Length: 171
Image 1 (cartoon, helix red, strand yellow):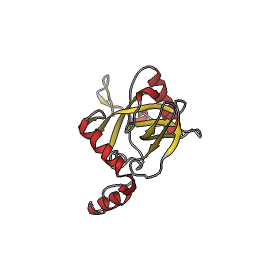
Image 2 (image 1 turned 90 degrees about the vertical axis):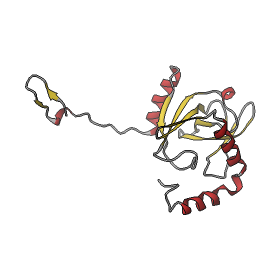
Image 3 (image 1 turned 90 degrees about the horizontal axis):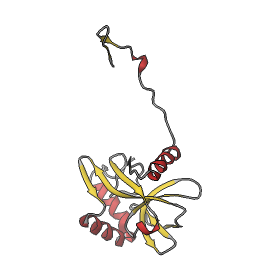
Image 4 (image 1 turned 180 degrees about the vertical axis):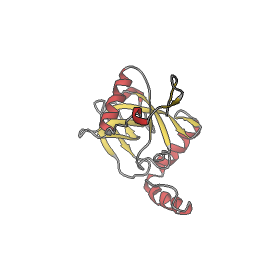
């Protein structure tokens, strides 16, 4: 609510900003324009496929434009699938021309993807007041360990969530 300085009384709420709902495709189209201008984008994580490293509705990620030369195994990449869906998953396998991805809470590899699909990569994670650079040696070590545990990580997530009283992987 604003104040009308001439009359020094509250303004009516008819000047309130109206919210507009947009699709993720529209949002990422705007993000791609920002990437083209050399600007990073900060987005709130949605979905549980990257749990436990990224938490739905809690964590934010800073994404920058990236090409094939910029990504490596264990990076989190933003891609656009052939059907138009945008996905933020971890690079699991990569060669000169293509790469495969997997969600941290998943076992199956997705791909192959190539430079046509690749939009950007996560360079930082924000959890509350904490800033976690993706270049952090501690984070990279934990991610590599988690990647090695791919065959058994779903039971680990299930057990961890149960120990936390169901407060882990929720949507």
